[in-house]
Length: 470
Image 1: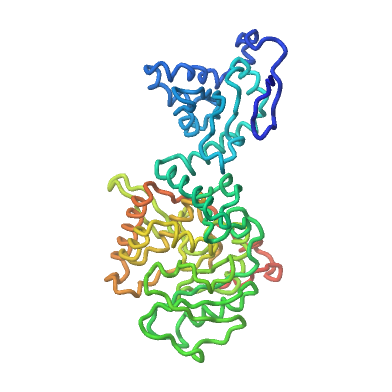
Image 2: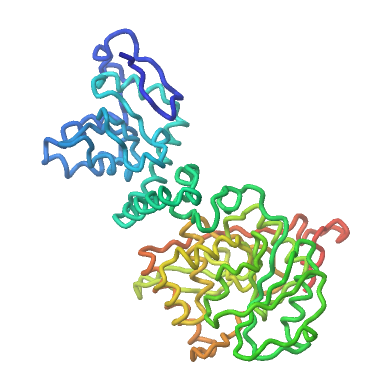
């Protein structure tokens, strides 16, 4: 019989000392289980109901939690330990862990032999503190991704069955064991790891500009033509797509400006959320989402894209907004004030990965998309909710020459701008938070500027010289 234990795929193992484990006991304060001693009482909990009330704080204050077999092979304490970031030490020979077909439990649990109970103290002491932290982080990832609700447990089971049935489109095991999890890696989009934004592998070297046009006509004096010229001359621009959302037909090709890259007009379905539909015409991972009234220079576009290549899983852009909790009204507030803190970057002028088009269309509940269309002009807020919920990270703000002003929506929603539109967007924040079941937006105080930006040095030493011109 071997006395080895499995932990982290076989790494960090050690043999128990030759002397009897019971002789070690806890007489030495140096070897006493400061955080795991409480876990030993978990052995009694399945048999002593009166101690169950104290289980949650006990687990949260423990580093390792013993999970013995219960009345059956498994134990409900296993999921409680995951939720509390307590590393499960499993003592149930023959237990097949949940979803072990795709989840690598060696990164989150220690599997032992229930016949070697007294060797637990010496075994866990051999695990390095860095590995303990990695174990705890992985327990939290697995809990949040697959076990935090009955809905997620059922969805995970169904997706695993789908992967079995459609073998060619099944997700690699890597997706299930890396953030943000297998449920957020849609096999309909791709099964290749570099195609997703979360792993920072080979970020796109070019971008597609997607400009939403809602005005009924196009004239040479309109901002959209200046915007097309500025964006298309970027060294990183691959193509310009104009998403035509007006009821009138778009102007003929001769009315559009001549550009150094292809310019294509595509027709939307005249819904506000159309801008986030996964159009096949988008041929690059990077998407520059623009409203027709946006005002950007080529230098601003170039710098923002360079920043996005370092943060391909986030929204990177210019106009920022923020949310806050109003205790008096007992609801979420929405503000457009320029402060040092923000939680949203509006997609009126922002870069993001095209995979979020697929998540927006195929992963978000249809009710949330319909709600954004009904409320009017809230799809950019919903996209920020989605990206923050997936990444658990804030967006990234970059340098902007002048403050972005939101244009009034062109749809017949009855919103003409001003206070009424502001209250409408605040209502969107509260409705979306209710739809998600929590507030996923994350605040940030980070703004990225080019090197030497606003420094008192020669302009010839600066790479993005146009950024400082008003």
